[in-house]
Length: 329
Length: 301
Image (cartoon, rainbow over all chains, first blue to last red; front, side, top):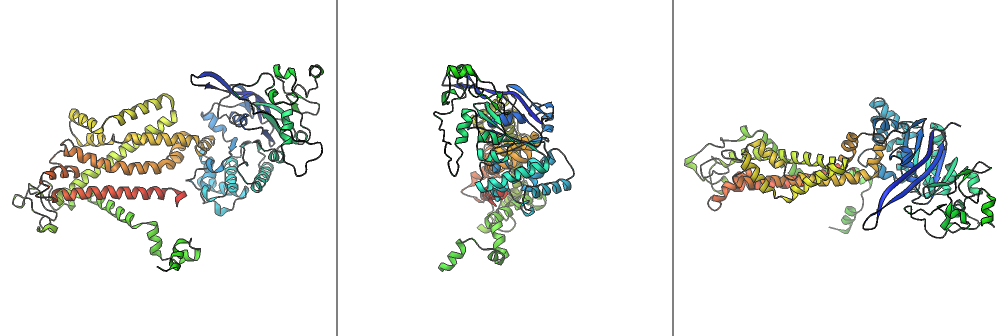
């Protein structure tokens, strides 16, 4: 399958100072992440707060330059931020934000903002832009009489639809959605997620969908990557990943999904401790201090992301059934 | 008032009542009477400033030595000098009209200069950050730490007094406030979603700042303008009073107040009308500024 977006060994480190006298340290927000997004598919990135999901999104869009690694989009490397080439590339990749009210200018009408990308990239005449914006508002399920409203006059779900319309109007190949529904009511969430799927079918757009909510991810994703401390620990099709998580961290995450009736044998795994400080990442497997099944090797060797027989990718020594490791345990 | 009446006032009016209300009520809600009066006053000032030459009954330098210090009509004077005359027999009304033109020119010119200068420096600082921001902030601190009157005195002492120079000098008053405010608000806006979102759409800096950030921070800047405008009128008055502002025979509102001070007990009308004009104009500008800020904000409409 051809890929639309491909990230290879993507890393972003921030130089930070700790303490009063500023010992220099390196914060590894993202540390060697690789994935592919095929056209018209959805890859979901999940993980807890601070695991580097949003930084990955910014790297993929070229909003910040990576410390290491490459992003290839439609076969070409991303241009540097805020250059002319980068601005041109915006027509093919767009972003959707967690807080739709913050992402909209409260002084401009909805129609004006939806048409703005066309204005920026000088597409069509004024009348055509207006026409197109109205068509897009219709496509995201907004009534035409809302076009003249201002963002604060709309509901949360309507605002997110406006943001979606603005992202879609240039017909991009990729939309990066950073927690697009986590600020919405559950009932509205479902509507917006259905809209995502409809629009994907209609416009053939690929999504990189970032969320901490596994229920949401299960509904929209074709492929799920679980991140922990700046790395992908498990990646695979959502059905398999949710039915039979392999990595101990994924297992804990999946066990935290609330279910109506808890089946026998499905117990809640409660992780101990807090996520470690990304400035001082534990040696070996970053998850080993909280891992219930960690062995000696986990402390010293960083597990690589390797393919399992069923096609899933897992970064865990134990998952790959290494006999020597088992014995060491 | 009966309790029923109170209820109709406090409850949100249903749409039928909305249509039923008289056009006058709706008009007065959109245009409060105080603001209307202020707008009328400012418009009047502008008309006077524009047509000063044809409105003044006498030349502002014409002497009428037989009618020196004659009181205005409302203090028992005659209609030859409606607002009285000064110690040289010059018509106060004619001088007032010319002074309004001069003061309006200085105040508007200087306010625009300082707003444009300060806002652009603030935007530059917020856009580039780093070195440029530090230079701008150093200039701001320098300006804020020096009493402006001293700067004005030294500039006027070294370069002499000419009207364009004087307006430019007044324009340097208060720019640091615009710079600080616009820098702070722009940095905040850049961190906020909407500016980032537009940048992410591929917009260049001109569009981001001109179409999005500036309109969003304009309300604060407009209020600052309405605060600076009276200050500039007062500063001009102060400098003219010290003899460093507008030079005789030219006249301005501050100049008139300054020279009228000597006759305050015998002929208070000399400084009465220019002082009243200063007060009313600055008050009107403040009222209109407040109203404009609310008007420009769609979220408050």
